[in-house]
Image (cartoon, rainbow, N blue to C red; front, side, top):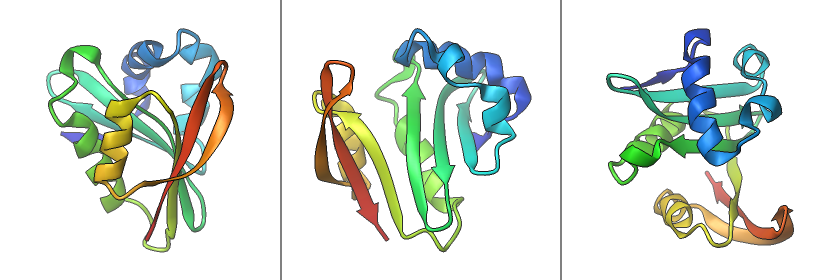
Length: 139
């Protein structure tokens, strides 16, 4: 089941976030994010939380900040469920969705392309020593 995150989900989100970034807790202050005006976090939960999607929803655009699925549950369609939920639960005035993804993250790139995202630009050394693609989907 996909739903909006609550304060009770913070430990699970931080646990999953550490799979993405060892400093996740320090870099992303989930209390502030969950109470923010523009941030939204969706979680995928079965018996526990196995994935989350963090977006920044502005007036006419959405920036995907992070999407993380527990390594033990990847390949089960959880990221797609999170993406579907996001598209169904954002403001109808949204005109563009954007994100950055490491150029060597083939699985993520294929996921985003499945949802109509296209590579718009390349950002050199966006992730320390790694380049990233800026991808977008216009509505």
